[in-house]
Amino acid sequence: MPVATTKKGLAVLLPVVLLLTAAPSADEKRISVYAPVATYSLPLIERGGREYVGLLEMLEPLGRVSTQVEGKRWRLRYNQIDSEFVTGKTRAKVRGRDLDLVAPFVIDNARGLVPVDSLSTLLPGFLGGAVNFHENSRRLFIGDVATHVLAQMDGKRSDDAVNR
Image 1 (tube, rainbow, N blue to C red):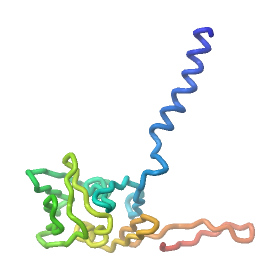
Image 2: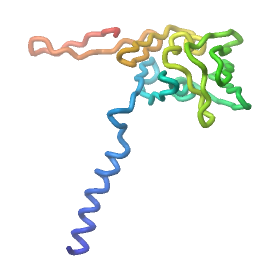
Image 3: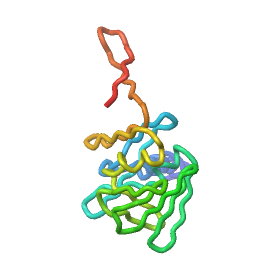
Image 4: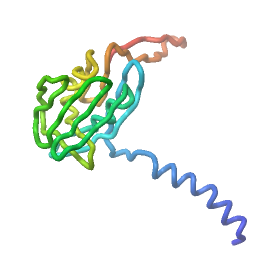
């Protein structure tokens, strides 16, 4: 096979391979987040039969976030709000108030992981507003966010705002 044909074949094949390996697998579970300032999705991590998500990653698109790990303690600062979590504990402090998690907090390679089921009670302490988590569809709505659904009706398109 000529060298030019081999290089051409590799030039076509390489982007396809990179695309397939970079794309999330169909088995990877994700949570979709809808907020007034951003829409994004994050991977879910399974620990002890429960789904967890990185708290830093959850808050980062929404404001300024920094973290600090000291032994079993993980501290997060979101905008001007301080919080503290302890690995293995189901109680956290946000704005100086105790909040209960449905499962123990986990530190994994300096990442703070919180149970997905706790987001509805945990995030309002940071964000100061309503948070609605739809467990079956793994969708998290922050604030007064509506999903706009484009509906096809009688050959005409109409925009309907639907809270799901």
